[in-house]
Image (cartoon, rainbow over all chains, first blue to last red; front, side, top):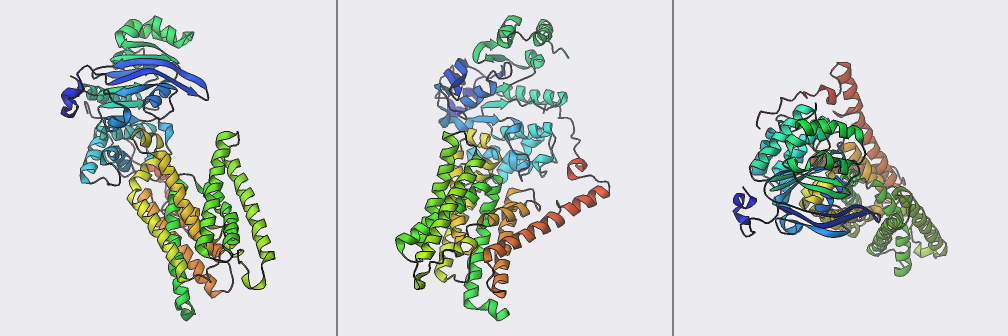
Length: 269
Length: 307
């Protein structure tokens, strides 16, 4: 299933138009490049993992693609179009550290922000939006917490509120920056189930992910990054000891753990 | 005493200052949540040289011109902060302090110079802009404040949702297409407008506290942005009106200082007696209920299978 099958509005774009395409993307902080010539195209609905060591530029790639960081050179396209034309088809889950959790706002109000993009300027969310937001909260297992101040939730719950907000965006392409950070194993499993469900509905989900052990069974394809794009492809093709060594360099401890994971194709814990 | 308060002049003053309190509480909420309180303070102090220069140009105390001059140097001061931060290694707090000091110092020197030079009849009365004075307020001043208030109110009410998303989660706001940089500039402009409108009655030195204190007090009463903005506006109004009333009853106390003290009183009451205040917390923890974070029913059912 492709996104064109889901959205009649998008039938103008040919079926093989990549959902996300990065052309020769280079990003620099203070003239020091952190990402070099990243070039890839993601086709078809899929669950995509971005993995790589700390400081490899995983979050940077996400932010650059979304226009949150100035890009040195190159550009990204979504559904064959520039970002500004398709913003409402793109959902985003930022890192949890990026907001002030003491902010006076309740859970439902945060989820409602997911509907703001489609509402446009000045219009306020109405009962339809509230209904949608409640459904998204329910889907994330957060019923009954609508009127909690956001800072009173646990880290995992806060993360799920962000995911509920992304669901309320009703996007075709999602970007999630470490959505599993600070989340317990059971919740992680439940979240992955929802992401897989989104994929089955014809959506594409791009996830910056840290825990290598859960990679093989979770993602359809991977972008392995260490300041450059080391490899991109279906998980079973690129999640190999050799490519991981190239990505992670000489960090043997991790690699030993991985050798087990790769061999068995199972998470090692 | 009551008659004193009901005089036409006093009513004019009360109308003007209550409007001022309302918008300063409202804009203050956004300023505090955006952590722009210090920027507001620097802006306020940087208005003084503008007031003086405008006085020198116009030659008499024509309020709209003075305030226009004030707005110019105030915003110029902020531009300097921004340039300092970008082009040097100076961090924003140092840059703000630097601009505040330099501009305010220049303003004090200028105003003294004007004062010394002035002939008896045309004393500029620029000193009153330091600590605020409402007794001279006339209908035209109130109209000016009303116009500013109306503008600020309309902008914030219309763009409330946009402000909310930008203040809470800038990355998300930008990713979903809101122009967060422009929203920031707009907020700074609103802060500037309120500061300038408040200069005659509250004064350069204390106008920022009228932005900050009602908002800080309001935070004790609510967990919602809308409610906080509303409560902060009301508290700002109460503080301003009580300041004026006290200064009317007791001759010659600077209104700006009185308003600030009244606002502080409201803050103390909020901090002690509100549901999130010190006493309520003590009471809850002494009854073994813990604070809210711990007592909350946080056990969440496992996510539904295949949700």
